[in-house]
Amino acid sequence: MAIEVRIPTILRNYTDGAKAVSAEGKTLEELIGNLESRHPGIKDRLVDQGNLRRFVNVYLNDEDVRFLGGLGTPVTDGDTVTVLPAVAGG
Amino acid sequence: MLSISQELVDKIVSHARADHPDEACGVIAGRGGVPERFIPMENAERSPTFYRFDSLEQLRVWREMDDRDEEPVVIYHSHTATEAYPSRTDVSYASEPDAHYVLVSTREENAVEFRSFRIVDGVITEEEVRFLP
Image (tube, rainbow over all chains, first blue to last red; front, side, top):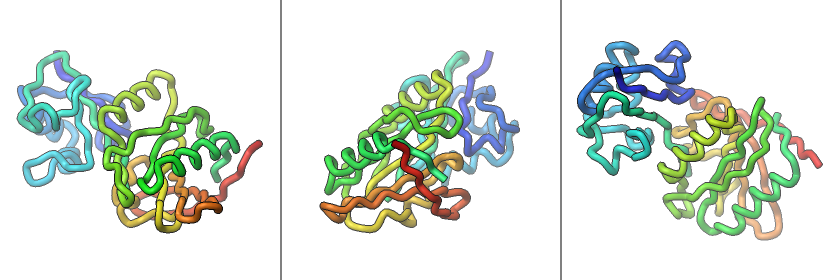
């Protein structure tokens, strides 16, 4: 079993159009590393200088990982990780 | 071109007026590019110069749209002291290439500015708005 990662429209060019892909890891950071090996280029859209990008929301199941442990958040088989670009502006 | 019912336009404008001088924001969900379901969102920034959807509310609404086979047809927000035209910040965070980005300005109390744009790869294209009865 693996972890399902739900991909927003704007990042589906990295996943051949797939809305959801699977990846593995024990933490969100490992998961993103694993995702990068399967879909090169995607990591840079999620992470900047070792932190999650400020205007990308990443959720573990129903929680925003910012309120959990950020990139260090533990993940387990069967979890769902959802990526949504923040809707924001000025 | 954006075709939108006058009823939805009125709802967006009322939301913008109610939250003035802070920026108001929200979504109109629909299918096949037709805006139908009005979803006002909380501006987590509560700011006169910035808006951001609350992250948990956004997750809930995006999942709900997924379940109903809807997409965010319109993403709207207000400018409260400047014209209804995308700011540099709006362009840098625009992340829904298929959405109509609607801007309203509440800078004049008695006049409504309601305009629609596509924002794709950093490029702003204004489009015609057709108001349906």
